[in-house]
Amino acid sequence: MYQLIKSHLDETKVETWENLKRLSYDARHQWITQNIKNILHSFEKSKPQDKKDWHSIGFLCINDTLYKEAEQIYDLMFKIMRSHHHDYGEAAYYRGIAKFLQGRHKEAHADFRVAQQYDLHAKKYDSPSASALHYMEKIIFPTKEIIIKNQKNLIHNLNKPRSLEYKIGANVLRTIHKWNSATPLYSHGPSQGGGYFFTLRGKRGAVKGIAIDPGYDFFNIFRDLGLGIADLDAIIITHDHDDHTESVEGILSLLAKHNDHNHERKSKVLDIFGSAGTLLKFHGLLSATDLLGNREINFKLLVPGNTVSEIEGESLEEKYGFSLKVLPAYHKERWTNQESAIGVIMETNIMNKDGNLLKIGITGDTRYTERMGRSYKDVQLLLLNIGSIEKEEGKLLSQHLGMCGCINLLKEARLGQPLLAILTEFGEEFDGKREVISKIIENWSHPMNGNHHKELKVIPADLNLEVRLTDLAIRETDTNVFFPYHMIEVEEGEVLKYRYNG
Image 1 (cartoon, rainbow, N blue to C red):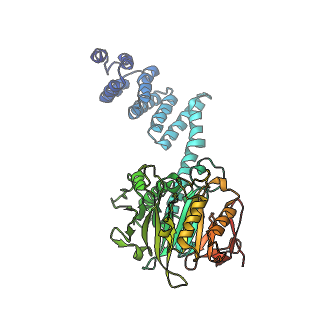
Image 2: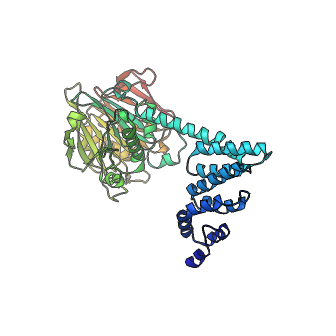
Image 3: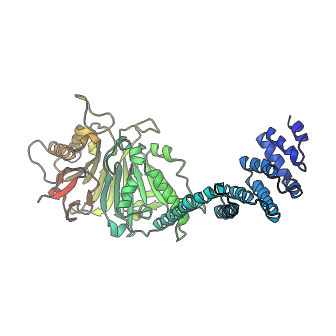
């Protein structure tokens, strides 16, 4: 069939080109591209007023995305029509269309202007050239300017100098967190999800930024603190659920853009420590390299029972000022379909007032199991993920600590000893009740003989919470002054406030 139709096509005879419509898309492409020189030569000998012949193949080229060929056809048509003082406005317009569809907007705009000038001279006031100019001048060019401006702003922001040390300072914990689980997906409240952010000074003297479980809106909140991708050095991920990982992909995208556009031409490398589910979820991103093929990410798998003291041959104590003891967490990951989540103890280089090195426990999401609190018996700061409250009589939660699990864990961990426990990962059913729930857990975690130790304190986390790790003092919301954590009371509201109560 193709050969039969092709036999009725002659590139030197315009009247045969109608048969092109009967060819398949690919066959038509092949015939036009192979014969474009002869087609143009045929037009050079045709009568200039035969616009129908020009459009018969010109429109076909535009419809079939043969834009370069269409441009050649209408460029020749324009020159012939103008030289014979015929209507060259149409030729200029369709040549502009062919250029526009190749992304050459300025050249297309020039053709549309030529077309409009001819049309106005010929008193054609409803020609398509006017609409085309309107699109270019009111929509396309202003939008391109916005894109260029946004690109410049992005590159500027990506090249913001590191400001971690003077924006937050060394040895600080910020909670960048509000509600837990899938609730941020349908919540209408501000700044949902998140995680934690630590600044620690390594033995080399540099202040490093470490994100823990960066979930929904983490980077937006992080940016509101005046920080950028340059201030983030490591991420620790306890499990693969979205409310603990949603911002990871965005962070890695910003990392890649930073490495592609930073003025110093020096690639930043991010250290990521994660569970088995995290490895499976992000394995396609973890091998990312910059434009020169240099690695952008170092990944370390966190396996319960292990102590992590290095990454890619570098000492974590030297680089970050901590090592990691990995603990089991009894919480099912999606990518393993097993309880492969983890908790960690960060063993830091920070000396507390008792002359001991500060240890920070992070439970991650986990159900309570008997004696699991003993794993955290040496920590002075404990981040507890409550999750929700027990729903069924006589049953603990299957995937989270819940209120009873938090109390049991605290009793096992530090009964009668100083401890600051940060309660977080609240379901939105806790709205208006976070302070009371924390107080219940604190009161019932004390020894039952009534000898309450004043330095056992349970503080609910919110976006304003800032803890100074050197002495576990908490920044008061209104005055920005740090006070000992046992002198802090919490004021419930849409966003919690931390008040001095000396």
